[in-house]
Image (cartoon, rainbow, N blue to C red; front, side, top):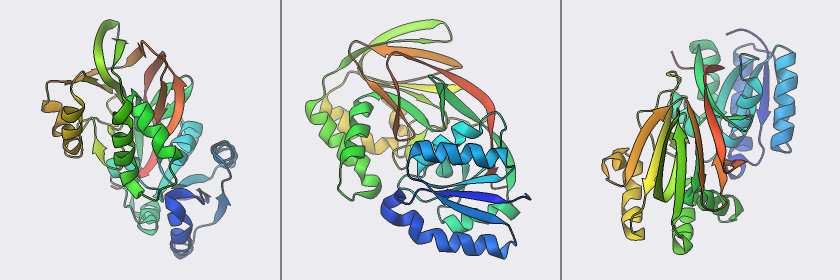
Length: 291
């Protein structure tokens, strides 16, 4: 893959991990003889602006940070505006995990000469796209706690958030419509999955595909707090789907809401207030991936 690179770096990603590993990425790009420039972000809006400018300039856009900045940049590049390269520098790096991109950013940069361009799906809610999973309910509380904490917990920040959120959780009543079919239930959460992975390696929808044009919708129904907690380790293996309280359905368009307000989060950041509608965007993103 030829062409200059605009490397957009979140200097705060991974508690400084991205900046620590940046010199290795720069060395790899120089070894390729590739023209590149480095831009450090000051906010998600700034990252989006940089991505738009790079796309207009005909550059390959490289996102170096976590799933948040990667998702924001992907949203700006959708519908073929530019090619996205992902250099993992955050805590979870779940999109890279799903695609098979190396977690070492310098190794990921090598895919510019050894990898291939791949078209992958995005999902869209309220005019904004995401890569991974949009979820609401107890996940809303977990994400809020994870974002607010100052504890340096790495990927365990989501486990910490879950334990905190469970202490005060009260079940919600949910109503959703998937491709015109409506259902309701009482329980913990609704998650609409594109990649199917979040929370630093939790395979909520383990068989979700990035190129099938479908959304995997995971419903977690009423159960005791202890049963919910016991089921969490199974999510890392994807075996939680065997539990009677967990339902997975697929569709191209999903609308859902609850009996009280929730903020839906995707790629680690707030994306919409409920009720919201999510649509699959088949093959909307061009990404550098392993062959």
